[in-house]
Length: 156
Image (cartoon, rainbow, N blue to C red; front, side):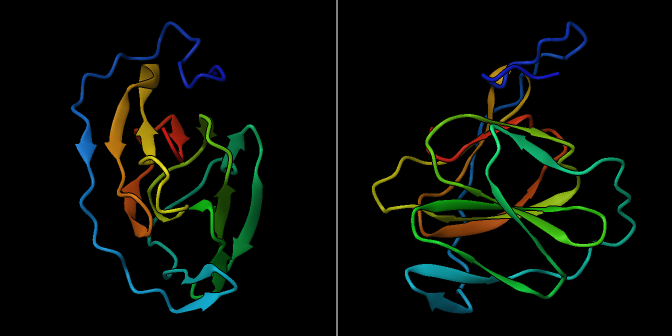
């Protein structure tokens, strides 16, 4: 169980001492612009990835299920995260600047930062709320291994 701050509440959670990795990701070319948003095409389904439970987030945000090779719009002002959910990509649309706890996010996923240009860098947090990745400012995108992550802050 993870508390609202992204800090585990169980004693069995290991303390992470991994260094923070700052992402230097070049902006991927969007497939098109859609009313201030960026149209994103999802990748093919990952191979050999089973899923035990549906990926979720707390507090809840708008989500969308997108088939492999399908598209969605990451609207202006949003940080969008893609997680494989067994038969489709589950896209999470984060807008509010706060810490979001993530559950059952496994394997390689993708993110698109389409927040305003002045927004702080997004952070991906591990056990104990320790930042593991500092992502590039908007506009940017990349891939990530969701397995060691416990929380996301779109504007830390």
